[in-house]
Length: 114
Length: 112
Image (cartoon, rainbow over all chains, first blue to last red):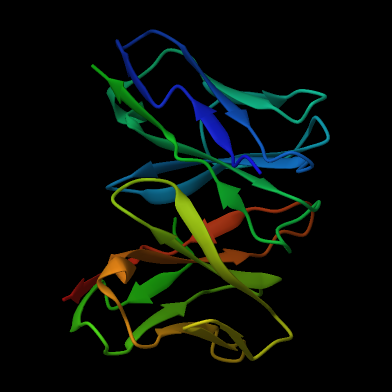
Protein backbone atom coordinates (compact mmCIF):
# COMPACT_ATOMS: atom_id res chain seq x y z
CA UNK A 1 0.00 0.00 0.00
CA UNK A 2 1.39 3.38 -0.99
CA UNK A 3 2.68 5.63 1.77
CA UNK A 4 2.24 9.35 2.24
CA UNK A 5 3.44 11.14 -0.87
CA UNK A 6 4.76 14.67 -0.76
CA UNK A 7 5.65 16.72 -3.81
CA UNK A 8 7.95 18.22 -4.70
CA UNK A 9 10.86 16.73 -2.73
CA UNK A 10 13.04 19.80 -3.10
CA UNK A 11 12.23 23.40 -3.86
CA UNK A 12 14.27 26.58 -4.13
CA UNK A 13 12.40 29.87 -4.03
CA UNK A 14 13.29 33.53 -3.78
CA UNK A 15 12.26 35.80 -0.92
CA UNK A 16 8.87 37.32 -1.52
CA UNK A 17 7.61 34.51 -3.72
CA UNK A 18 4.90 32.06 -2.72
CA UNK A 19 4.97 28.28 -2.72
CA UNK A 20 2.46 25.43 -2.67
CA UNK A 21 3.32 22.02 -1.28
CA UNK A 22 1.23 18.93 -1.88
CA UNK A 23 0.49 15.87 0.21
CA UNK A 24 -1.38 12.69 -0.72
CA UNK A 25 -2.24 10.65 2.39
CA UNK A 26 -2.49 6.91 2.67
CA UNK A 27 -5.68 5.66 1.08
CA UNK A 28 -8.46 5.67 3.67
CA UNK A 29 -6.74 8.17 5.96
CA UNK A 30 -8.87 11.26 6.45
CA UNK A 31 -6.67 13.16 8.90
CA UNK A 32 -3.74 15.13 7.48
CA UNK A 33 -1.31 17.23 9.49
CA UNK A 34 1.61 19.42 8.52
CA UNK A 35 4.82 20.06 10.46
CA UNK A 36 7.81 22.31 9.94
CA UNK A 37 11.26 21.10 10.95
CA UNK A 38 14.22 23.43 11.34
CA UNK A 39 17.54 22.99 13.17
CA UNK A 40 16.72 25.87 15.51
CA UNK A 41 13.06 25.25 16.36
CA UNK A 42 12.81 21.52 15.82
CA UNK A 43 9.49 20.00 14.77
CA UNK A 44 6.58 22.39 15.01
CA UNK A 45 2.91 21.81 14.27
CA UNK A 46 1.37 23.82 11.46
CA UNK A 47 -2.18 22.54 10.84
CA UNK A 48 -4.44 19.53 11.08
CA UNK A 49 -7.28 18.75 8.68
CA UNK A 50 -10.02 16.17 8.90
CA UNK A 51 -12.72 15.74 6.27
CA UNK A 52 -11.81 19.07 4.63
CA UNK A 53 -12.06 20.99 7.92
CA UNK A 54 -9.13 22.61 9.67
CA UNK A 55 -9.39 21.47 13.26
CA UNK A 56 -6.14 22.78 14.68
CA UNK A 57 -3.67 25.47 13.76
CA UNK A 58 -0.22 26.06 15.18
CA UNK A 59 1.42 29.36 16.05
CA UNK A 60 2.44 30.43 12.61
CA UNK A 61 1.70 33.72 10.84
CA UNK A 62 -1.17 34.07 8.41
CA UNK A 63 1.26 33.65 5.50
CA UNK A 64 0.97 29.94 6.16
CA UNK A 65 -2.30 28.43 5.00
CA UNK A 66 -3.60 25.08 3.95
CA UNK A 67 -6.57 23.16 2.71
CA UNK A 68 -7.81 19.64 2.27
CA UNK A 69 -9.78 18.32 -0.66
CA UNK A 70 -12.65 15.83 -0.74
CA UNK A 71 -10.23 13.01 -1.63
CA UNK A 72 -8.21 13.87 1.53
CA UNK A 73 -5.28 15.24 -0.44
CA UNK A 74 -3.91 18.38 1.18
CA UNK A 75 -1.93 21.41 0.14
CA UNK A 76 -0.17 24.05 2.14
CA UNK A 77 0.74 27.46 0.87
CA UNK A 78 3.30 29.93 2.11
CA UNK A 79 3.06 33.44 0.74
CA UNK A 80 5.66 36.21 0.81
CA UNK A 81 8.47 33.80 1.60
CA UNK A 82 11.13 34.80 4.13
CA UNK A 83 14.59 33.33 4.60
CA UNK A 84 13.42 31.83 7.90
CA UNK A 85 10.84 29.72 6.08
CA UNK A 86 13.64 27.48 4.84
CA UNK A 87 12.83 24.13 6.39
CA UNK A 88 11.78 20.55 5.89
CA UNK A 89 7.98 20.47 5.65
CA UNK A 90 6.47 17.17 6.69
CA UNK A 91 2.98 15.89 6.05
CA UNK A 92 1.45 13.12 8.12
CA UNK A 93 -1.75 11.16 7.79
CA UNK A 94 -3.74 9.16 10.27
CA UNK A 95 -6.65 6.77 10.05
CA UNK A 96 -8.78 8.18 12.82
CA UNK A 97 -10.06 11.57 13.77
CA UNK A 98 -7.40 12.08 16.36
CA UNK A 99 -3.85 11.01 16.98
CA UNK A 100 -4.84 7.81 18.74
CA UNK A 101 -3.59 5.63 15.88
CA UNK A 102 -0.22 7.26 15.33
CA UNK A 103 0.79 9.05 12.17
CA UNK A 104 2.46 8.00 8.96
CA UNK A 105 4.79 10.68 7.70
CA UNK A 106 5.87 11.47 4.18
CA UNK A 107 9.51 12.03 3.22
CA UNK A 108 9.01 15.77 3.30
CA UNK A 109 9.57 18.74 1.04
CA UNK A 110 12.82 20.56 1.64
CA UNK A 111 12.23 24.24 0.94
CA UNK A 112 15.15 26.60 0.56
CA UNK A 113 14.46 30.33 0.38
CA UNK A 114 17.26 32.45 -1.08
CA UNK B 1 7.91 25.91 22.13
CA UNK B 2 8.68 22.26 22.69
CA UNK B 3 6.64 20.47 25.31
CA UNK B 4 8.99 17.57 25.58
CA UNK B 5 12.56 17.45 26.68
CA UNK B 6 14.61 14.44 25.81
CA UNK B 7 17.79 13.19 27.29
CA UNK B 8 20.38 12.44 26.46
CA UNK B 9 20.70 14.69 23.42
CA UNK B 10 23.19 12.22 21.98
CA UNK B 11 23.99 8.60 22.75
CA UNK B 12 26.74 6.44 21.30
CA UNK B 13 26.81 2.70 21.99
CA UNK B 14 28.18 -0.54 20.56
CA UNK B 15 26.11 -3.02 18.60
CA UNK B 16 24.38 -5.47 20.90
CA UNK B 17 24.07 -3.02 23.77
CA UNK B 18 20.79 -1.57 24.98
CA UNK B 19 19.87 2.08 24.41
CA UNK B 20 17.62 4.04 26.73
CA UNK B 21 16.17 7.44 25.91
CA UNK B 22 14.05 9.55 28.21
CA UNK B 23 11.35 12.11 27.55
CA UNK B 24 9.66 14.55 29.89
CA UNK B 25 6.63 16.68 29.16
CA UNK B 26 4.65 19.42 30.85
CA UNK B 27 0.90 19.01 30.42
CA UNK B 28 -1.67 16.23 30.65
CA UNK B 29 -1.72 14.08 27.56
CA UNK B 30 -3.97 11.69 25.64
CA UNK B 31 -1.07 9.61 24.42
CA UNK B 32 2.67 9.70 23.83
CA UNK B 33 4.31 8.50 20.66
CA UNK B 34 7.88 7.71 19.66
CA UNK B 35 9.24 8.31 16.18
CA UNK B 36 12.54 7.65 14.42
CA UNK B 37 14.11 9.86 11.78
CA UNK B 38 17.01 8.95 9.54
CA UNK B 39 19.18 11.79 8.22
CA UNK B 40 16.55 14.51 7.93
CA UNK B 41 14.04 12.34 6.12
CA UNK B 42 10.47 11.53 7.13
CA UNK B 43 9.54 10.30 10.58
CA UNK B 44 8.73 6.64 11.18
CA UNK B 45 6.15 5.82 13.83
CA UNK B 46 7.54 3.34 16.35
CA UNK B 47 5.04 2.99 19.15
CA UNK B 48 2.11 4.75 20.81
CA UNK B 49 1.27 4.49 24.49
CA UNK B 50 -2.00 5.82 25.85
CA UNK B 51 -2.23 7.82 29.05
CA UNK B 52 -3.86 4.90 30.91
CA UNK B 53 -1.08 2.48 29.94
CA UNK B 54 2.17 2.08 31.83
CA UNK B 55 4.26 -0.12 29.55
CA UNK B 56 4.17 -1.32 25.97
CA UNK B 57 6.36 -3.61 23.89
CA UNK B 58 6.95 -3.90 20.17
CA UNK B 59 9.71 -6.21 19.02
CA UNK B 60 12.98 -4.90 20.49
CA UNK B 61 11.26 -1.74 21.74
CA UNK B 62 9.92 -1.18 25.23
CA UNK B 63 8.20 2.04 26.22
CA UNK B 64 7.17 3.08 29.69
CA UNK B 65 4.97 5.98 30.72
CA UNK B 66 4.75 7.56 34.16
CA UNK B 67 1.99 10.17 34.07
CA UNK B 68 2.61 11.19 37.68
CA UNK B 69 6.15 12.21 36.74
CA UNK B 70 5.17 13.27 33.23
CA UNK B 71 7.91 11.17 31.74
CA UNK B 72 8.47 8.31 29.34
CA UNK B 73 11.37 6.15 28.34
CA UNK B 74 12.20 4.20 25.20
CA UNK B 75 14.42 1.15 25.49
CA UNK B 76 15.92 -0.46 22.40
CA UNK B 77 17.39 -3.85 23.22
CA UNK B 78 20.22 -5.58 21.36
CA UNK B 79 20.83 -2.53 19.19
CA UNK B 80 22.04 -2.76 15.59
CA UNK B 81 23.93 -0.33 13.37
CA UNK B 82 20.68 0.17 11.45
CA UNK B 83 19.14 1.67 14.61
CA UNK B 84 21.37 4.72 14.15
CA UNK B 85 18.92 7.64 13.85
CA UNK B 86 17.29 10.48 15.73
CA UNK B 87 14.51 9.47 18.09
CA UNK B 88 11.69 11.83 19.03
CA UNK B 89 8.94 11.62 21.57
CA UNK B 90 5.69 13.39 20.75
CA UNK B 91 2.76 14.09 22.99
CA UNK B 92 -0.84 14.43 21.89
CA UNK B 93 -2.85 16.59 24.26
CA UNK B 94 -5.51 17.75 21.82
CA UNK B 95 -9.03 18.20 23.12
CA UNK B 96 -10.44 18.75 19.65
CA UNK B 97 -8.58 17.01 16.94
CA UNK B 98 -4.94 16.19 17.28
CA UNK B 99 -1.67 18.04 17.37
CA UNK B 100 1.63 16.47 18.24
CA UNK B 101 4.19 18.37 20.29
CA UNK B 102 7.67 16.99 19.73
CA UNK B 103 10.69 16.84 21.95
CA UNK B 104 14.11 17.91 20.75
CA UNK B 105 15.19 14.38 19.98
CA UNK B 106 18.01 12.04 20.90
CA UNK B 107 20.67 11.26 18.30
CA UNK B 108 21.54 7.59 18.67
CA UNK B 109 24.71 6.21 17.09
CA UNK B 110 25.24 2.46 17.16
CA UNK B 111 28.80 1.52 16.31
CA UNK B 112 29.41 -1.82 14.57
